[in-house]
Image (tube, rainbow over all chains, first blue to last red; front, side, top):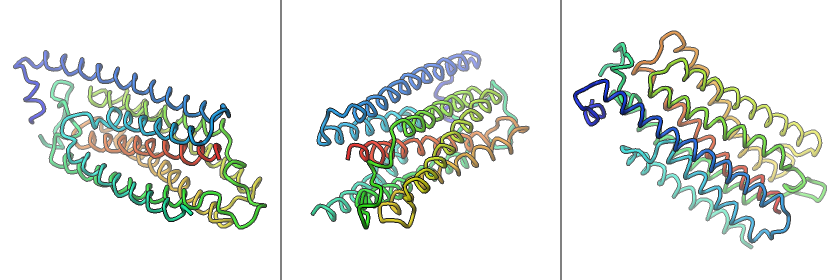
Length: 112
Length: 209
């Protein structure tokens, strides 16, 4: 079991303590990223609720907020920041690439 | 390590979701599936963007007539919070705290059910108040396909989490079911990822015009 061997200090109770602390630390990061996600959502809704901005500003702005929020979701909530996520990254970014080309193609079809 | 092995707090590995061969395969296969799901939803988004507000006559409701901020906001908060509760569930899974994991998974299911209830109300409202149906316009078809597909994913995710909760309620945590819980929580987060783009592209951009 490789992941245990990496953390092994020869003293099992020390290892458990260490892992518990690591897990608690990660959970704190996740709560912080959740707060940021809530904040980004509030900003996006507020940008639309306040009717003062033009669509040329609002649309790219809320898209940017969505992308940032999804990065938090993928890297913190779905643990893509952890080691051993090379294949998942390949799969996800390949899917994203094909998907973006599709969106681009459909958008240009209806351009005129 | 074997899947049948009786685990204790002391023997529980650091990465229980990936410590057997079966778990490793499950993890890899599931991410491949998520890559495919990304393509699926991107195609539906592309279709929606191309057909948005494409209606046969002026009597049909457009995006800006249909959508309301408060409902979308509450639905978003429910789903976003359910993503956090599922993170808490996996935190307790890693610490071999089975009961706590089940409580947080239960909360996730409740929040997800709340979201689904709001969506049912919303669709019903559009159909009866605005006559905005699946067959009324190309806009209607594209809207219900995209948002409905996401809703179906939420419904499937709820059934999935509930099923593994009930099946494993007396078993406790082991290396056989830990990867199952982990993969279900990944699916749940992915549903939230898709929703972030739905509330931005469909609802917020719909209200902007």
